[in-house]
Length: 150
Image (tube, rainbow, N blue to C red; front, side, top):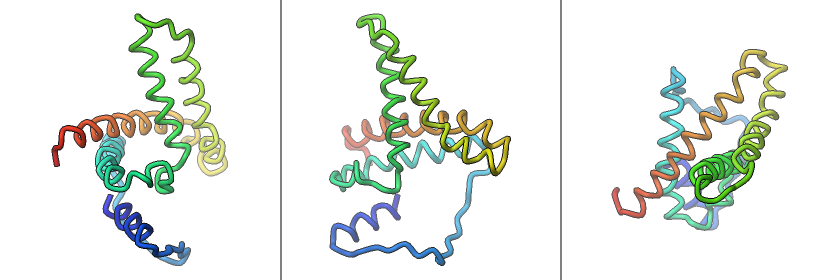
């Protein structure tokens, strides 16, 4: 999260940042699905520290797209609806949220269809798995921030 923290600090100091399409960045990508999900978990986990430090940027964070934020919220709705269903009848709440979560994966799948059919087919599964790991990372990271671990 050091890039995000730096950009937030620069923004708060009044600096303007511009996108340079000619800039070249090199970084490593996970070589397995499990490692990809682990990266997503820990990015979310540590993002909570950045959000605590820069609370005003939480909703305006352009690094985490609005779609990912909505998908994560839908994941939480699903979990809460399932947990509370024996106590409070939340009729179809989990099912509707699940359908909305699945529907939110379709724009990427449709875009990917013109590039790679296999990617288009598996992308909803990958996006939902990413959402679950991101959601869990935010919850555990928030707990971590509340109890004061560094």
